[in-house]
Image (cartoon, rainbow, N blue to C red; front, side):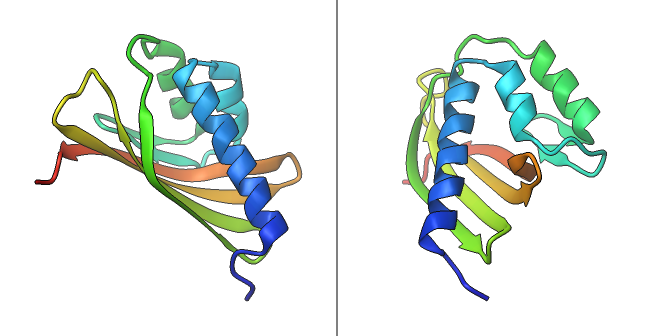
Length: 128
């Protein structure tokens, strides 16, 4: 299996950047488009476990747009072949001093482009 084929990695990096921009600007339509439209899509968040695109969309639609700005650190994107990738990053928000967020996403190439099929977001105390 080819890992980190340059053009594939560039595609996923672009999709990840689009996701980040949509997240901090609360572009719900773009966020919905970036997740796989399937009942098997999963998102574990800081306070919720969402199974299926319907639950994910409902969460996004109800989420407050306040305080979504963040800075990223230590982002790692790895592609596996031409159709699967993992994106992992740390993030910090001014609204959560002393905390560091962790985000992991599994991306899959679909007929409609790259989509998140599984995501996990958690927040922990900033390591010393």
